[in-house]
Image (cartoon, rainbow, N blue to C red; front, side):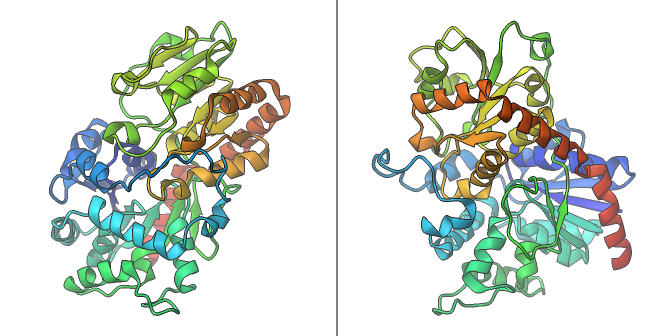
Length: 427
């Protein structure tokens, strides 16, 4: 079986797909990645064949230029946004859909990607396409090749929820108020150019691989394939201190790599994060690089700063983690069974795609807390949440319980057979 993975131009998104790609490869299938040329070195470094589709995308320039005005001071707002299912209290779903169409067409799909990926699909003829939920070029590849079309989520399935809110199940060319579908307006002419029509499958695929736990929010009426998220961090060097038992309680603080790599969005103030832990009787591992630290006045004595640590290793020595709600960090934290304190980053509608659902779910399960959105965080608030996580035995027990549930979830190796059967039926 030939399996084509179509990834977005971020290493963090590539690393979400890597364990699934490894599962197909070790099952004997031929695997390739289609990506922008900027990502080919990262693909090769993890042992896969990368095929360049589209011209290079200067993501740091593009994302910073496209970023909306952060607006005036917003500290008067509540620290918690509405629940994931209630995002309509803050945003009109149709405005969210227009924002998604604009972002995907501008940032993820260079105009050259369509010819390139159609040619790849015709020449290589994949049996299965596994695509990032924002890489609709993967849907075109599946149609050109006659392949099974699967999405692989790195967050919650907000696109399915937005579509249902705007058009009802099954979609449609217009809303009840007559406004046209921005996704159809963008992708319809593209697919027609290659002899294919537009339908909801272009957006939602035939199957959707989801790694987010069942206790996180998700829309109904989508054919999900539940798969255990495996933390994958790419090539790295492991030092003994990362896995040796620390002398005192250790916690970790991170904001992920996507915002850092491309310098966009609003993350929590590092100064605020450091103020929250200063003086606490804990060792803090903080993953920030020199650029992020440039504006920091001082680093507390109990903070050890590293530009990168493999979380699947270091979290085995930690008692809690403060993070942004990203997929890889979530996966490693669940695997180690530690309380998670979530501070969602702010970039367009990004927080609706994962971090709020995770924060809500952890809080309901008693295994973590939704501290505040990045633009609302204070050092005192975070300090209180950290102290609670380290002193509340119930939170520790619940985090361990979620780990046991996590380990019972079908692994990527188990998931391979689902798609082998789908492809066999298609043949």
